[in-house]
Length: 258
Image (tube, rainbow, N blue to C red; front, top):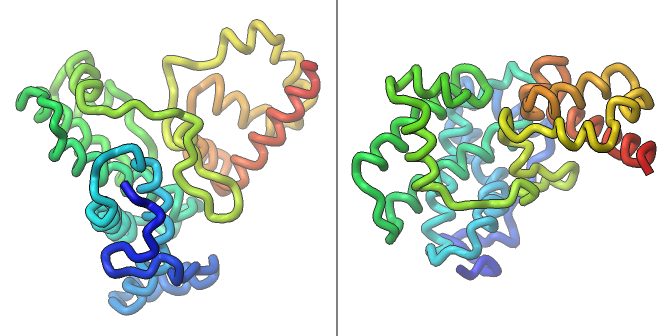
């Protein structure tokens, strides 16, 4: 897939606008009032976000124009459902929706044969997950998805595994010139936490070099398996602030343990 194309779907990617935070806020006020021109301007100002996301699918055989169009569908859905009252960056909210839209397209067009019943279970789980995120702005647990659609969690896990493409948790999915947004920042990990790492490196002692807020963030992220978005909502700061505090705290702990 050629991602070095200058023109995608008739759009000159070298001339895409980049909106400032104040411009985004002003446009969203107009969007909520039904201003279609503002919505079009906001979409154009976030097409770089779509381009950043589709780069992660560079190893696929899909046509870049097709993926760009599908990514734009995810972008529009994110704009339609984004809640500006919450202290969450739009890119943090939009990236999973764009990825989900592209994955859904690729699954539907996949040459790998997965049984219809298995695909149906997976799709029900995906839709239930997306609806849950829209309502609660956090990732649901497997148990919560299972309860919502009335299917056992074991069957859901098996179905989701059958349609997923493995990716690295360290893979960046978006960078707006500030802190990069990684796959691991978008998911919660309640099974593979870092207790073993904590015990081996005596991190409890290392955490004493942190201030109270940094220690709390580290506990939420690595002991309770919360996402950066969930942590941001709990302590009432932005996801970008959580990211910076987390990176600083981990750096301090590494220095202590050397």
